[in-house]
Amino acid sequence: MSDFIDLIKVIGEKVSRLKDQIQTEEATKNAFIMPFISALGYDVFNPMEVVPEFVADIGIKKGEKVDYCIFKDGTPVLIVECKWHGEKLDVHNSQLHRYFHVTKTRFAMLTNGIIYRFYTDLEEPNKMDESPFLEFNITDLRESVISELKKFHKSVFNVEEILSSASELKYSREIRSILSSQLVSPSEPFVKYFASQVYNGRLTPKVIDQFSSIVRKTFAQLINDSINERLKNALTTEATQPTIETPAAQPQPTEQPIVEDKVNKVITTQEEIEAFFVVKSILRGSVRSQRITYRDAQSYFAIFMDDNNRRPVCRLYLEGKKYIGLFDGEKKENRLPIDTLEDIYTYSSQLTEAALRYPDDVKN
Image 1: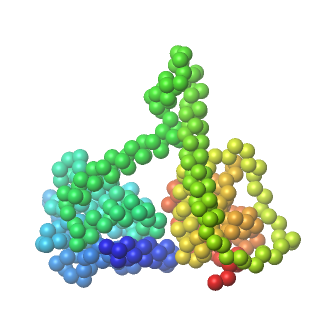
Image 2: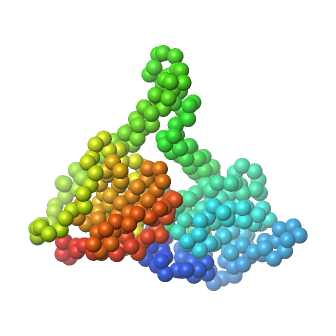
Image 3: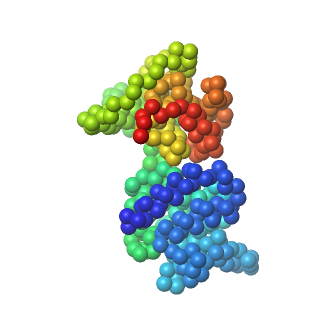
């Protein structure tokens, strides 16, 4: 299965590199999704294994078709609904829900070639769950996701085994979502639980309001400390490795640094770290990943090349209404609104162009 891991990573790199040139749903299928199905071990050109435009008639409504139905040993095992990579997937859940009901498969996949969502029927037999049990961005895959994805490979596909892990994945995902929401805006019961552990007085509305801020800040600091500890450990490990001496960078007296906010009790959030890795996944095919660094400030989160604030790639404003700040050749910032971190991919070409402005001082 080592070949499978390599294939999936190659597809992820291809998506990062080509997505700006892919402008239609059909092109998304051919360039991104068919290679993904092939990586799962299925012959996309064998109609006994992969059936395009599979008929899924719904009651009196005839001619309904799902993009692909994957068969194993003559039995449908996975239906696949595809969209153009620039489309949001949320609005298409109901369509896949209808297809799932009239097919015999236990699994469904909704994808735009970048985001992949896998569904099953854990809550009610033959009725697709509203939320996926597995979701990932193929340009930024974690090892844990690859481990789950392997189970869909033709050579090891087992319905019961996947269903067993799907249950744990689904509820774990939902718990993570609840915790993420509570960490941003803790509910009264959540605050009361922690306040009751440390406060002996009466939990009046005023006390609850005070503890709401304390709980939120405490968890944010806890996450920040955890991230910083991991970075510290990584840097310590790196420091023990032999280094290659490189020529000292020439001073640039005429180039003015972009002034950062004065750092005062800055807390780096999990969302900012995730945004950093989104940008890193966009740039990794064009520059060495070690060159991509970040610094947090009170009002924004900045991403640089070579840990040098004279080499900006972008700024991210993620408190309240979200923005991404892009820099032109003269390092003038242009702020653009974004709804989610996924929208950062819309500006892949501008981010890559910004990163490539700065020469790599390390010679191969």
